[in-house]
Structure formats: structure tokens, C-alpha cells
Length: 314
Image (tube, rainbow, N blue to C red; front, side, top):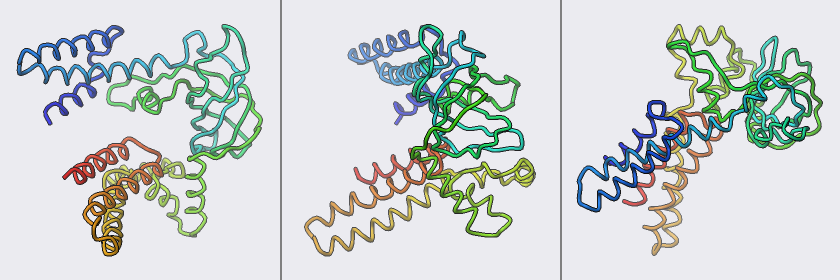
């Protein structure tokens, strides 16, 4: 357990030690500690786990940063084909969404080919079209490198973009819809529309946030009221939601295991060992995907998987 904690601590402290040559140096330090552990040096394996976590974290951070839009294409105008892969957030002046770049209509050195199949965040100002997840558009966009303000204690927009695996931001100048394709975000949008249309309650806009973590229909006034009352955390799909789904699926698996065990007594122990944890993990994973795999849901899902593995292994 100590090794696991040190490995996690190494990953968490990425900004402290990440620099261009950090990955090979940390990898070398890991190998050195492993060699020293052969000589019965007690602290060597402990340091090896810490250095390994630091190396992996630093490599991942550098990978994300290197994938961002090249400086030479900052503020450039490109003609691209993109698919909307998130539920657009709409306000009176613009619609914002995540998009996957399918193709870039350019050639030679003036083409940012690193954007192909990558995520970008776009805003479409004064758009007359009703944007939906899964739509395929082709048009001109103005691209920018991800950036944000560095005010102390403020929201770090750049870090949020990195966490979302966004490599560029931009604004749509002009585009035409050329098709549609099924996306998971489109399925979530259909579910949200069903939740909003099935009731005349004035509070139905909160249902999508409470059930599937989709907050696009909540206004700034709603957020201000939630912050004033200290209830913002209720609209974040996190540990309690995942635990409830996993618990009910585990209970269902236990009941099914007992029914199946009555028919096949020879395999009853094996069924009860595997069926409830598998259903619990499947239910937790599905609900985490339904909530958009946000950071709190991934954290809760990881804890659920670890607990169920302990259950399976006894």
C-alpha cells in the first residue's frame, strides 16, 4: 500500500518537477533504484515507485502540451470538417461546444495536420442554426492556442482545457452542415430532451443536472442561488451517485446469483463470487459514461473498481 501511495503522489505533483528533460531523468532514477533494491537497500523500492509515478505523470503532461496547436498557426483561419461531440452550451450571443476535427482542407507547411482526429473547443457567435451533438460541419474557423488567465485563486481555464484533452480553441466564421453521425453525446442530448419535455415543472432544468450531470440548461442566476445556499455540490455527479448505482447492481447480481445457484449448485460459489461485482462495475461504468466521465465520476468509478476487485479476490 505504501508503494501505491508513493506512486500516486508522484503523479499528482506533476507541475513541481515537469521540465523538458524530466522524463528520461526520472526514468533513469527509477532504474537506478530498482538496481539498488537488488542489493537489499530497504528504501530503494519506495523511491522507485515515487520516481515511476513522477516519470509517467511528467510524460503525460508533456504529451498533452506537445499536442496543442503550433504557435505558427495561432490566430490562423483554416477550413476544416468537424463533428460536434458534446452538448452545445447556448447563451444569447453564442453557442460553445467540443468538436473532433475530421479533415483539414489545406496542404503543405501551412496545414496544422496535428489537429486531425483531435479535440478542439469552438464558439459560434450569432449562429442561426440549432446545433446538436453528432452534426458534421464543414467551414472556416479561426484557431487559437489554448490559453487562460493566471489570476491567483481564480478558475484555471487553460488547465481545464488540458484536462478535457483540448488542443485548440476557436470561433466558427461560416460553416455548412454536411451530415450526421451517432455519438454518445447525442444519446445524452436525447435523454436530456426527454427529461425536459416530459414535465411542466418549472424546475425540470435541474433534472438533467441531477440525473446525468448535464448543466447546460442552468442559468447564471441559478448558479448564483446555488452558491449562496451552499448546494452546488448536489448538481455534481460524484461518489454518492456512483455508489448508489453500483450498490443496486450488486444487490441485483446477488439475487440473480442465488436464483442461478439454485439450478446449478456446483457453480454457486463461483457465480456469487463474480456476478455481483461484475454487474456493480458495469452499472457504475455506464452511469459514469452517462454523466460524461467527469473527474468526480472517474474518481468514484476507480474506487468502485478497486473495491470490487478486492471482493473478487477475497
